[in-house]
Length: 266
Image (cartoon, rainbow, N blue to C red; front, side):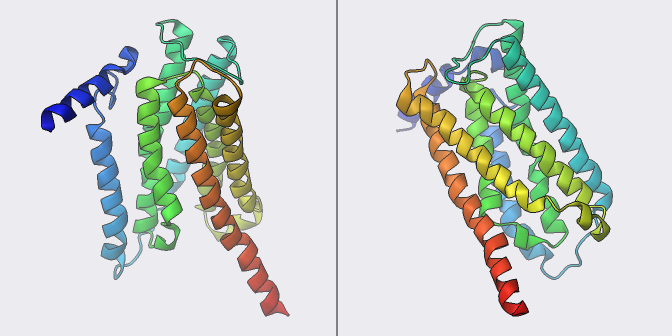
């Protein structure tokens, strides 16, 4: 049994992109799996450990953290966008360029940074726990943060470029706005009057996932693109799961709460 498993594993790894073989975290999935397991353990045990403790005031960390992620998101957005434009990428069908061409390598590096940024974003959850805001540590939050690591380890290992650019481009642009909001909100309640656009972030995220479904669905159902079909199907199904979860969040957070407020005012 073990021999069969190892043979399958080695065959699976042998199909990886040789360009990224020696990049940080890419030689083996084990480090990523261990970090995801540690993240989930902290998300489970952290709230219990903080239950009877005073929340920490982490403003001095949260503000620079969020604006650092704004900068990183802007950098990734620029790198993916310029690599795609200069390489004349197509929105309809874009195979991966596995060559050592400078533009192909630039796109691959941008994809790796996008993957690595998802580990940095684990601190979103850790700050929630330490600040006693465990109500924000929802299934949606933990599911999204942990599964993105799996998705993008596979993405960088096997398809660093091509159709993958569309996800990194849109998600980075959304994160510029999202972490700008978090950074400004961390200054305190006096900033709330300037953050009227909070509810629109969820709408923009939903539009983003609908665009992922459309983009990947086009290649699944409408065309024969020279890009691994399994990845298109995975993006299609994963995006549908996020649409369902984010829609549920939006309905509970904005529609139901607004209806309750209206009833109370009457």
